[in-house]
Image 1 (tube, rainbow, N blue to C red):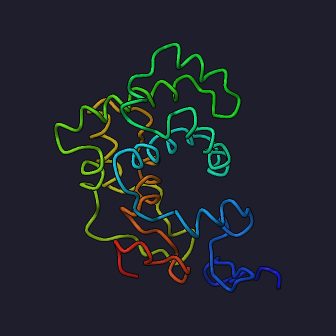
Image 2 (cartoon, rainbow, N blue to C red; image 1 turned 60 degrees about the horizontal axis):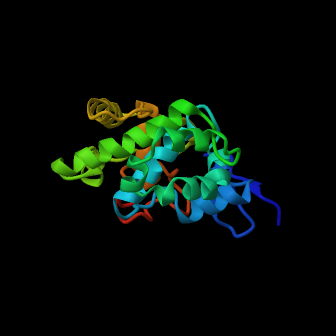
Length: 204
């Protein structure tokens, strides 16, 4: 059975009958990510640091590109262990710049190392996880179409500003809203999607 467009809200019914947005309906990698990871809470400092780092690397690129490179990112950044990355030296940065399997952007690589050090500093104030989740809004968007999905929010703007004050980089409001979506701080699954309300954080 071919995918069928649900024209009233832009959701697409896959062969399994599940409704997904267009971006998660064609590429199997993106579909699997949508079905199993996107919008779901993650556990611990390293997992949140990974999401923050990868969202930063994604800036200006497609998320599919980052997902395809994620195994290599995890390898070269020691599974995004905050203490290990924080100890990276200039030699490590140069090594990463030679690795074609990842995004070879000096500013983003250096920002990831610096952000790990900033995350360590945050431990004195409760840590990265508590800091990020402190920006959870009182309500989440309830988009009925892709056009209704926001790309920033007052909370993502505030998160961005606060992170920058703590020394983080590549944490603009749009990037931070994407992070909030990725880990369930907000739920922007379209109404009607089979993933709406599955995070356990927000009711449908």
